[in-house]
Length: 142
Image 1 (cartoon, rainbow, N blue to C red):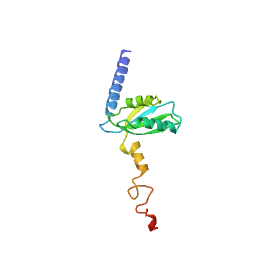
Image 2: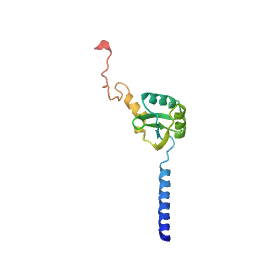
Image 3: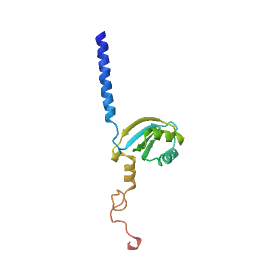
């Protein structure tokens, strides 16, 4: 019976050791984009998105957000000096208190700011997917 207790205790110790190492490995590098996922039970429409976006956009380090109305969750991208705690505090101040679910690093190409930039395009002939280069001409030439 005593050996079973020691075996269980050892297994728990090893689990804690590996879990602590994993959390340490997930710490963000300075300047890395982080994504906080927050559950907000009062999300109901696009107006909620606008209100939340207006509340968060003045914060230094805010990099964009997305929202899933069905799941009642928002995902906020941010960098230092902004923190997930400051984001949840600001959400409460604008009338949308929520529960922080996760915070994780996000590659730049998966960030909301990057996708917004790609969606907006770079202008005629400069990488936009919707406008062919050198196609736009002044009306007089047509």
